[in-house]
Amino acid sequence: MSLSPEFSVLLYEGRGSQALPPDRRFALCAALLDRGYSVSRAGLGARLAPGQTSLLVLAEFDDGHAPDLEDAAHAIALSACDIAGLSPDAVTDLVERRRGSQPMNQPGLWKPWFPVIDYSRCTNCMQCLSFCLFDVYGVSKDGKLQVQNNDNCKTNCPACSRVCPEVAIMFPKYSSGPINGEPVSDSDVKREKMKVDISALLGGDLYARLRERSDEAKTRFSKERDASKALAERKKCLTKLMAEGMIPADVLASLPSPEEIQRRATAAAAKAEAALAAAPSPQP
Amino acid sequence: MSSPEPRLLYCRCAYAQVLPQDVKDGVLHHLCSAAHPFESVADLCEMSARRDPRLAELASAPLTIIACHPRAVKWLFHAADAPLPDSTEFINLRTLTAPEACQLLPPPA
Image 1 (cartoon, rainbow over the protein chains, first blue to last red):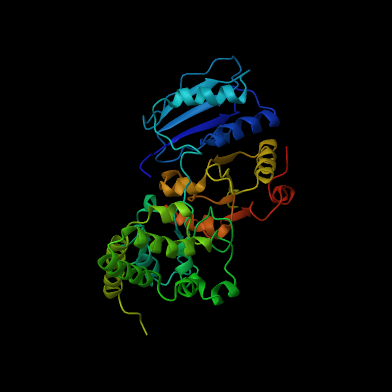
Image 2: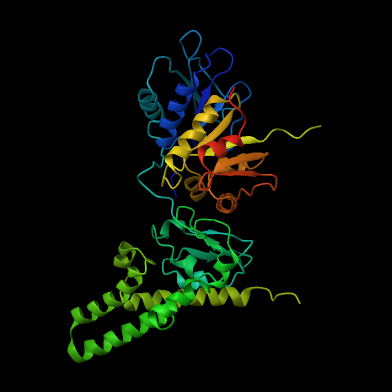
């Protein structure tokens, strides 16, 4: 993500301020967190994180006035607000105003959906890289599989995790395990993963099958010049995947033409092959 | 010299809400009732996606993370170039009830 909301809130209850009742503390924290803010609860001696550029201190100050604050190192923009008598909603609105135009992701606008690699399981086989049509995966300088373009990932699509032979790809927001990060059981590993299921579904490798469909479609185009029939055929194939709950409908709807799928699949496979060829041979 | 007490980090999972609301609220209320300071973030996944530098700071000291499945949390930090120390403890709000999770936390003041 390109946005960098290093704006944080500190709920201060140290010297010079009142301790908040637990219910009020809870209501304030929950309201701010649900709007996407990070909240620290601290007294004196709170630590500031590197990279943090702006910190708003909220407290019920003894004299009812927020002090002027300044970071001696001028690294962080510090400010304080007195929140005595303000409802949680009013405090949240106050924080929003203080944030001003500083960029921030907010809940509801974007779902953090991207693959997370469990490197204790990943064998660097590059099957995910070969499989993904959206260029989510790449290879590090030392030849290691990486998630490089997580913004490209299609929300709610866990298909790449199903082709991983080691159950090493997680989507923490997914509903069920082991894709959501639950411990991997022996039966998960023995299940031959979804790669097998994909093959069973389509009678062979997914992309090979799509390519076949494409070729078949081309043949039909030449015979019948009927693009709509070809499109219907492709939809039938992809709808089968959707029916298995493997790929969300909107992801299927956004898939490119069979020709483009073929081009991308070829490019991804070449990238994976190059990475594997460049990787050092395993030591005996 | 004894090792420092782990900091508490609570994830609200605000961006997708895969954690049960009653569990999230029950645990946050418990944290807010205790004397112990804590850090809370809207969503660890979102921070990992942005490679938020605050994750590295959090990972630099002993930590107890109150979030979802430990395997997911561990590798979310790793993905943000903020590997967690082996001593990190996890409280899994996807599998525990609120009372079960609260039993693992410092008691209310």
